[in-house]
Amino acid sequence: MNRRISMLLGLLYCLIMQVNAQNYCQGGVQMFVPTSDFGTSTIGPINLGVGFFGSNRYFFNDNLSLKVEAGYTLLLFDGDIRNQMVDLLGGAEYCFRPEGYILRPYAGGTMGLILMGGSAYFGLRPQAGLMIELGETVLLDLGFGQQFLFGRGNFHGFSPKVGIIMNLNSF
Image (cartoon, rainbow, N blue to C red):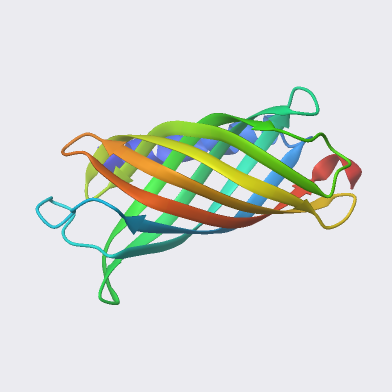
């Protein structure tokens, strides 16, 4: 059942990306550093997560954007893979400086479905970051967030990200 739900949500994500492909797409690497005890859960003890993510942003104006995001993270304990986490999220961000500035700080958040350890969780991730313009169509994104998971037990962790954002309108 969880596999079917994952496939359906993945397909929905791909469709949404195709509809919004005229704007900004992003890909990058992410980490998950637990700040709560996973040892007593069905997930088991973990001390680090490493993975990748992809997202698509739709800007309503120079400052406000909506985004959809999917990610995959391997959860590790002392270097051994213990589990995996799949994020399917949606959210909003506010850039404090409009396009055209080299440094663009932002704040926002995402929420949605997180699949981990055979269970589904509701995830909430407030985040802040800095977009650095590398060219007319490319930005470097340095993001930092605190991820909260609600479901069979409540967990949380620090979630830094590094990604490249590309404006597909310019190609």
